[in-house]
Length: 434
Image (cartoon, rainbow, N blue to C red; front, side):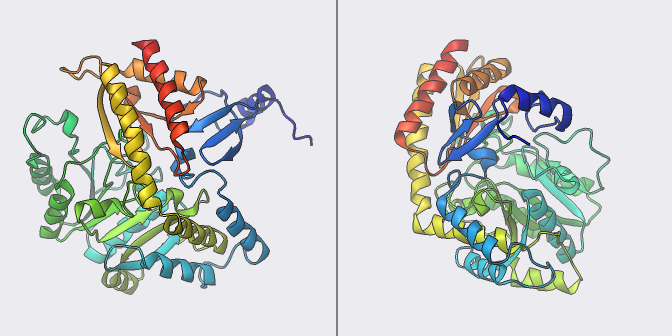
């Protein structure tokens, strides 16, 4: 069968055969991507785009990184898939390599496929360890779209999929830009946490297992918790015998200018999860915990696995990913890119009243649009139009909070010239609606 389709031919096939549901759209439209290198992707018509979402944030090392390609070729010539009950050399080496860079005491890893899988595993471990079944999560969290992960994903994509299993509770978001408690005070006084746990204690069956949260809320709109919030959350968990689970899928592995986002708060979780660019664009995730928690979970007979858990091919890609992160010093690269890109966003904020807030760190940054900076009325339609205009002009990012927020995740490979071009495209798009 010939492989030289036109865009319209492929779109016609998609309309007839593809399941049309997508995370942020349901219609069948272009662009259709066929090629990528570094920070650039190309569609079937030859048009190039700056990918400031790193694919689905999984290509943060850069599209088709040559060392990832090499790792895949090595596995293709040795062993692609292995019996998940047996050990293979790649998964053992990956677990030992990961333990060299994880927070103190967190050195036991299991390898799965997606972020949803790893978060389901983390919650299952917390339930087995504590004997409880209740899990809480902030209302701007995103943890995946499988049933158990979706049950604690409150930033969207939650309604209409239930009923969920009992024991999943939302807690208030540390959204300082819109906080009703302390946005006009010098600092967060953690009233949000006090109120959340007062409600949680009242609703609980007395079987609380843990809290799962992102250190910085990405899909919820690039919302940064105020300093100290994560430490206070950990204290409240400890008082109740709950475990703190950190979902570092979108924040870990150097992306925010430190190896783990929790480092910047001085917090060591009980369990944490990673995915996204962990495999350099290949689907692999990990759930990581302590010796003590692992031992008790194993004693209870816990089994969390899928057909492709611990596959040597994906584990080899992850080993290469760790090599790239460490040898290319990507912690510093993320900090440098983050400072330069934030400078652009802050300059745009000075020029455009539509930008109410600029936030984020390292590679993960965002802006929030408002019709009025005093009332902070969200500019939903304007943001949606800006996002569409940027895409038409060759800049990919994510539209969040129904259009009032844009999220930018440029790959580690992004140059200053590419950031300058992206800022020009964004400036033009904002001007077109202002």
